[in-house]
Image (cartoon, rainbow, N blue to C red; front, side, top):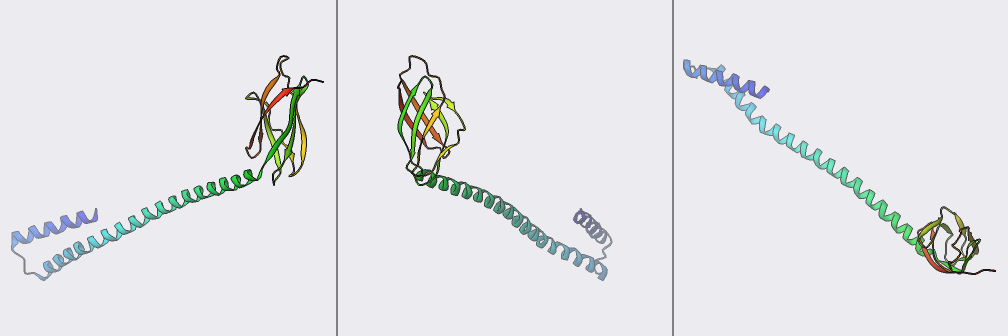
Length: 177
């Protein structure tokens, strides 16, 4: 805005001097020198503003990208950590059967870390959730799940899901007596 007003002012002075022929005045030369000096500073100010805008823009992009990279790094480290622990988890179902009173699984932890059973599925249907039944390394135990099977069922497919999402699939048969 100031530049436009200054430009209009100097244009009026130049037209006035052309009309009167008043070029040799020291005052006019001073005004013309000021006009050229201001024009010389304008590209410098524009360049400085451009540099400032570019630096701010790149700083914003850098901060955004750094945040995204940290989030990806954190997620990758977490997945690696979980993969290491889940590879240390090893579970064996030694005996499995069902009868009219429920489902019985003898589970043995052969891994290096504590194992916790969270969910049990029978024929792809969730029958027990959030059990939080745990075994220390080298220990075994009988997991009893109360579930009423149909009277004619003699076979079922059981999936056991641990807290580290290790899945154990077992085929069980009816044993009465």
